[in-house]
Length: 107
Image (cartoon, rainbow, N blue to C red):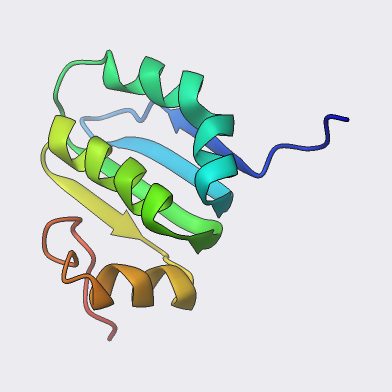
């Protein structure tokens, strides 16, 4: 039985030289990473450029989710995560990856 995907990845082209916007949503765990696999592969075929990851709707990330974020960060430069949910912020910070993933400190 196939249900709704656990996670999603959408790419939005931005005008005027703004970074490429990558929207992640749902639960980015082993099942979620599999759900976005084809979209992630397509994203990683793009030329290196600045990327902004909108994590507003990303409700969960485990090691598989962090691996997805690192694959994006290893391909694009610079990378910035914006609007992370508290749980995603915490996972990135606990792993010491805030600077690598462009996670800004809370104001």
